[in-house]
Amino acid sequence: MYELIGRQEESDIFLSLLKTDSAEMLAVVGRRRVGKTFLIQTVYKNDICFNLTGSQKSPLKEQLQNFAYQMETWSKSKVAVAPPKSWSEAFKQLSKFIDSKKFRQKKVIFLDELPWLASHKSGFLAALGYFWNNWASQKNIIVVICGSAASWMIDKVINNKGGLHNRVTKLVVLQPFTLSETKQYLQSRKIS
Image (cartoon, rainbow, N blue to C red; front, side, top):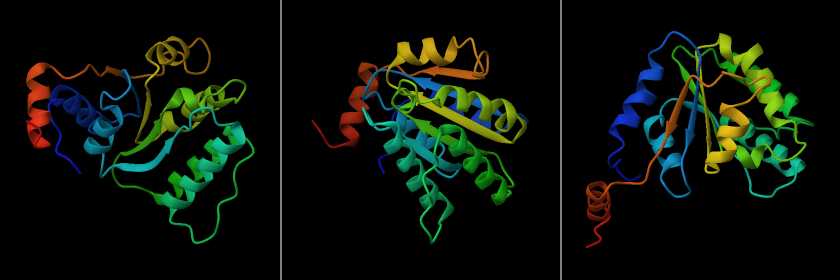
């Protein structure tokens, strides 16, 4: 994996959340290809206990199948995990999985490309709100939500009037590299 260039302020914020005594919901937004996923995976590489990435324009059934595949991977299950019938059921499976692990230190659940997971009529945002309010908010955990559609993330999550209202504890807006950081990045890749 490549070294992390720049992003010191954001890295410090991410790491500080591991040291708090409360649950955290971290929202990371920024335009496409700015390095959101790379930054999260690099800083939290030893702390992620579950990761799911939304699939663009995929139907709910396929997104839930992808959840089941990820549950198999992260739980190291030797048998196939049946796809949940809904996002509510998926989050119930996730909470049971995390509870069964009895982690000693704060862990990270990373939900990437949230706008793709929360497709029209999928029930994802309501299920995420319930999961946060009734389980995750009482755990020693960080739920990281990320998406490239910044306006969607702000409208649907940050300014949510339902179950996710005021639940994001930290918002990080990732900006493109400065010229100096771009130079460092290109040099690190041996590009002149």
